[in-house]
Image (cartoon, rainbow, N blue to C red; front, side, top):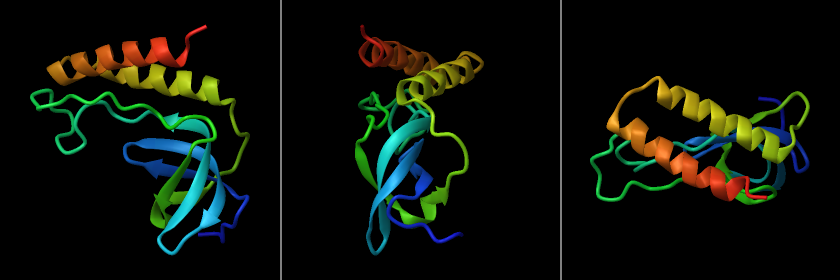
Length: 127
């Protein structure tokens, strides 16, 4: 991988979401990444039982916020080439894509996930 340094624009996978961000610190096992855009919205539900609706708590999983910083394991970070999108536009696109995939998957997990996204959208895009 090309050497990334503080200030490099990268993609990083954090939990089940994928983001575009800027490296703000380099740590032994992680890069500290400031979020600038969303490529893939985190999956809804329980991380330990993916795609399962029959869990104790079905978690609402929010995307990392604009300029929020996250420690991302070094192996999950890659250099990013291209234009950095507007955060809200990229978030809307990621949510829309996730919802389209869920509509094609008629399951109880998909149904619960779609309900979570509707709630998140009200919060994300209010105003």
